Length: 434
Image (cartoon, rainbow, N blue to C red; front, top):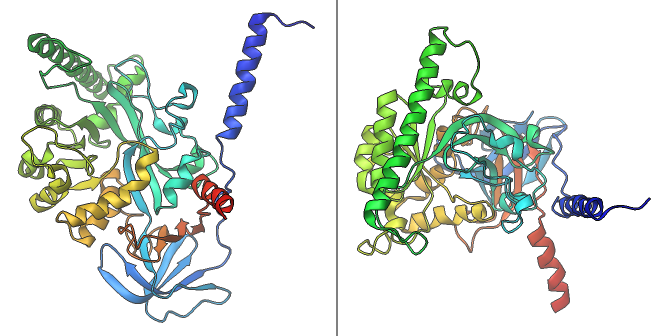
């Protein structure tokens, strides 16, 4: 049988895609539930909610933290792990990223992060999550047990999901679905750029048109909500139907905005419709920290390594913003809005310590604060009896480049294999040197 050129090209494309998929899938097997209790002894426990305790034991049973204390008795048949002097933390949480949605940015077929059109509130990031991504093991080897992934795009981007990072597929990975509706706020600056060298008047007009379009989307969605409440809808618009929980307060609105003007516009819209608002990005949040705190607007701050936004800003402004938010009483979490670089978030929190946060506050920014924003603080984010046994052990201070050495990670009591492609390549080329 002779294939036409078109069929042959299609065959090559399909087989090439399958081969690429096999190459891009890691071979690390997810951990199994422990058959017996596990007792960890001699640790410095960073509980988050109850301070730091030394020479302390933690008992894991049935995937949860069963007991915390000194000189705990090991239940019959329990596995005892002597971890004397090591540091125990809750599994770290990375919010607002696209881990598992992108494998290689330059290869379009491995990028499932972005949806087209402006109105996609019914899109769910979880269905595009690739639990076999080679990137994921490199993130969890730095202590991360959870990531909240969101779909990118313009305007109404879709719904995020909180995923645990040791799973066979996205169904296994989902911890909390529809953690929020993500919105890309229209530009507010009137300055042109190298890529968009338009006069200020044209930029201002385009900004106004985009803002008007976004406001109209919310008007349409609110009209749908009101009609639904009155029993007047005779069909289902999947877009606006997925915004019903946003208007009744069950699902928060995550607005991606950096400029102070964008944040103020978002706050006005949230006030108009009575929405629960969280700002993602928040480079200018330091300028209005008191207002954000008063309005109970949370911030997922994504620029802990950021450069100054304006030429007249302090060179370290991005670094001290977490301290400003902390002092103002803003609920905040730290994040790096990417995917592969999420592993560096732990060191970004460490840098924030150098610029004013206490170690306890920095730890909260990637644990319990993040869990509260994601709506799961009752089950994860701190070391407490009854919570999920998602724990990470480091030889030294996990936020310190020199002391950081993650040796163990458990998610829901399952021991996680900390091997990854980076370590494999390191071991390979170290042999060449030797």
